[in-house]
Image 1 (cartoon, rainbow, N blue to C red):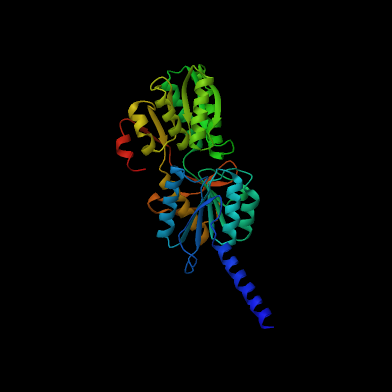
Image 2: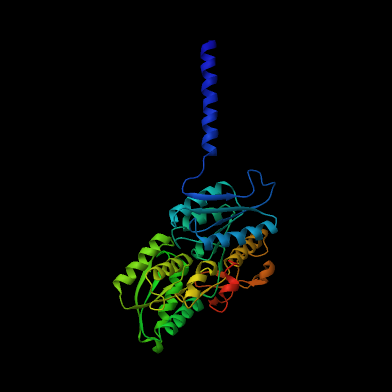
Length: 351
């Protein structure tokens, strides 16, 4: 009997150790930064999910979100999958539902694939907002738009046409083929190209680097090989434009193939100064993240419900009004800002 009791207690003890080890194991395929620890002291938990790890633009956005939420007294959870896939984000969302977060802000990797799991989150009282790259209106309370999508698309065609003298072949190096924001900007690029003044500008291809540096490099090299007469590349993604800048520099194509798009000043300064990219555009991703933080807090506090015409204060960003988008509602920050040789030095150390 004593021998049986001893064996039973040993099995219970071993099981306890295995359970504890399993609970403490890191989540595969994700990068986490769980700011509040296990006990948040009653603070509401605000989660931000970016597209993938190792993206400087996303890291700056998460910095802005973190600062805003901490100023507002909340606990911050920052998560991203290793690869920019909907599957990776779905896994993270399921985990956040279990953690009973108050709000989830997400830069979506796929407009529609995330709908079932985000609806599940909303059904359990979690406020959901998309930021930067929208999810569909059925699976969010509100979208935080970094700038006017029409102006983002049109201004890049205006820029590239000026750079190439209104004539020649151009290509687009985008992020993923499912990225809502990228696709919308490209739609507006194509609409701008319908104007008579661009009749001699030919869009030969839209390539996808999946917001991965190595793939963006490969796609740029493929564009140059497939289209030897290519005059310019538009890369409306911070990863893509930096990768394209490196390829053009390494191949000695400064001035021969123009480059513009959306980039981080800190990453693009050398390419602007060398003339590889005469100029490019962006907004401040820190402000975009902060706007998402203030919006999430307003939703959780009940200050807004995501309805058209509502307004709330967003700290230094001022009053934000909820307006229409194609499917639901959104707040919209300002026009993209132009970075060129005259101002890049003052911005390259900022972000």
